[in-house]
Image 1 (cartoon, helix red, strand yellow):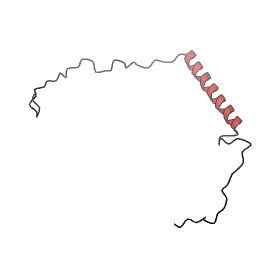
Image 2 (tube, rainbow, N blue to C red):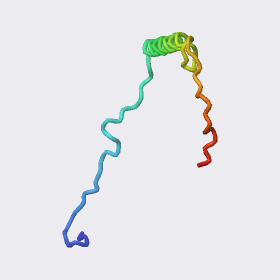
Image 3 (cartoon, rainbow, N blue to C red):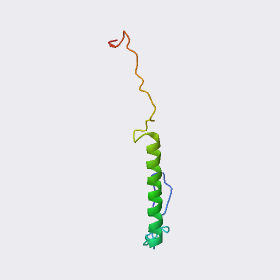
Image 4 (cartoon, rainbow, N blue to C red):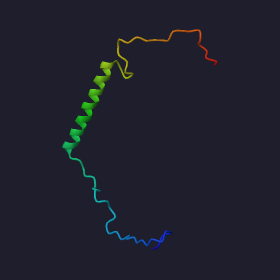
Length: 80
């Protein structure tokens, strides 16, 4: 086969194995592995709940915060 630049090239398209080498079928998890994952998920959820309760709720505001507003000025309407 020649391409437009005149260089002769050849390709070998014969493939005997179409599956990737690293592909492995998923295996069924054992009872022990499932229990371990569930325990880790419960511990993570409990830690997140404790963190949220110590912060004052899901909004992330601390309990002793004050609301700060901007002072009113004579330039409230910016009509440029």
